[in-house]
Image (tube, rainbow, N blue to C red):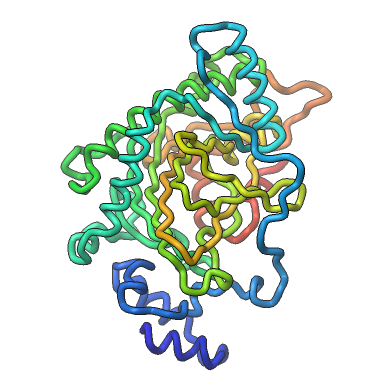
Length: 374
């Protein structure tokens, strides 16, 4: 497959290309993108190539405007009411304007952040047979390894492999987690959940609501952890690490290593989100934009492929991920935020319905939110 794919790319025989066969062959290896590099690939298979990019339909690179993604310091947030009030305002402004911010002094030690990055690296760099045992496309498995959740839906595959772990509301038993990263995944998840609870309180207050409002709605019940591994790419200009998308959750807490590549779309310009040692990236998801009636923004973002790597990141999505009754709870614009001047923009929906629609189309560069507008 590696040889034939390279030959087709070099020859440019688009008419001869059988995408379905190439995708299935890749999927059946159960080794992901890293497996291609380990096999000696020097040119990327066509299934990873972005036709819009190669025909100049997309603007690539980062044009940096005067502003940059806000950085918010949580130091003394729980010790000083005045400091907390300032942080609430900064969070509300950042999430209403950018949909993104970076947070420092968030309470998770740097040693834990580094250990989490190392744990994800160990998983993806273990021997092939050990890693293959975790490979699956069964969304109901609490722990699984795969490459591209939308491999069979997307028009192009991304240069990325992923370890997926459902950590709440019903976490896996310890023995269900890979031994090479078991302890740190459990520890990091617990710490992220605590930070997530603080963020739900801050966001509630930023919306002018009681601190427990979003938690009382059940927004904090689910946690879905993705350990991404972006291998060095031999032709980074032809593909993406992650295509432009918004997140299907309430918000995401992202840990990234120091390689960089994350960009956010701001006023039609792609802006870098530079790694800051010890910081975490927070971004709003579609579900919180829906329930806040557009007060908080879920913004497009992407990850560039690079010829250096691997780049490693850990994304923690706050949303229900199980298939239980919590999936059927209705979510719509919060009534306390509505008025004659601020009428509902969206209809009520369930997380199950939202995720079904989101995953059916994959990362196609379009938001799912318009589908749920009134």
